[in-house]
Length: 128
Image 1: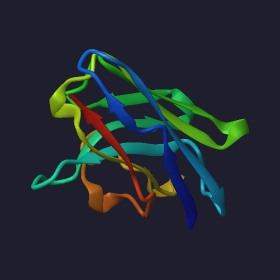
Image 2: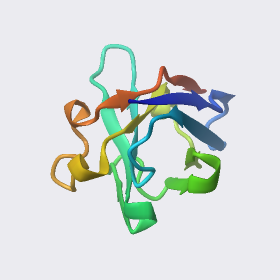
Image 3: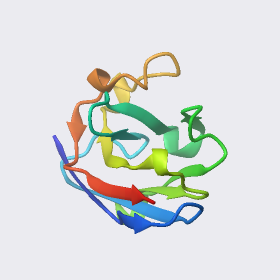
């Protein structure tokens, strides 16, 4: 299993921007099947964005579409989430996730937390 470590979270004013990073180490299946999730207090963990097949496919939640961009750097073993025009409702713990490429979820199931095998410990994002 791959180890995932998120960073880049913090406090920002509404309308501001943040760039989250997810570094992966140890055994890894592929950097071509990864995603970002978030969870606010009292709410279920929800999918934010997914990157598949080295950037050939991207999927975003309706709540963040147009305001976030998922990207990856295979050489640096890193996944990124750029967030712009942040809103108070974006406040949550953000997690990165990974899955074996052969078991990579598709458009119909990527947003379900249960389909992802490995998770990081999260990085807090607070928008006020």
